[in-house]
Image 1 (cartoon, helix red, strand yellow):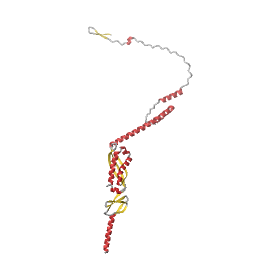
Image 2 (spheres, helix red, strand yellow):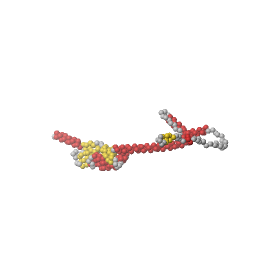
Image 3 (cartoon, helix red, strand yellow):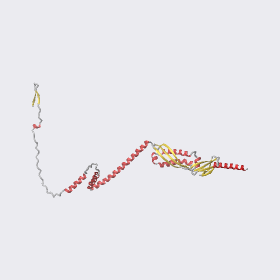
Image 4 (cartoon, helix red, strand yellow):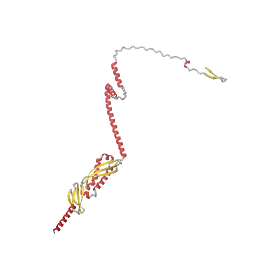
Length: 307
């Protein structure tokens, strides 16, 4: 009798151990357990830690609540200004409703990936090339809103969407490079013209100041000569401006001109009579060229010369 009781106790203990092993579940901190009893969803979601289910009756499925980083494959599309581009992005999302993520969608990861690709194609067609290159923050917000709208029903929340890279054709890259170069050239010319305008104003003020003080022009010329003469391997050609010559002439007249006494009244002086020039008369014969001999033919056919 005792042996039968011991055997029964061993069997019951073994069955209890097997049942405990089959019913025991451990849910991690970043997971939640969704329990189905005979195919029907239980209302409570099992939290992290040790939990028990009914073997062969309940089935528990764990859902990860961590933020998932999902790269979106590069999508090729045509922008609003008819430029073909390839854009890839990355999506950060997490599950906020474990029961909805299991019940309402077959595979929430695959669904989010397909929605991200479709939304990325749509955002490419609605945007221009300049927006894709420079205004990405606004596009990221629009893309996040497009993906998050259907994902909320699946118990998934889109945390962030970022456009990683925008690939352009080589011809478009060369065109943009030429455009940037032309813009830089335009800005350089504008800056150079502005500098010339400012320099001309300063030179005009300096010229006006030198006009009031002529000695300043000579001093400036000497400073220029000194600066150029510092280079011994150069030939110096020194021009003399007209203003300097006039200044030196005025200075010479002011210093060397003696004071002349008052001039006496001048008496008119008769101008000497000029005889008309005598023209040397040459004989007419000297002016005429020498006569040449004339040849006359006589009746007999002989030629005689006459002087």
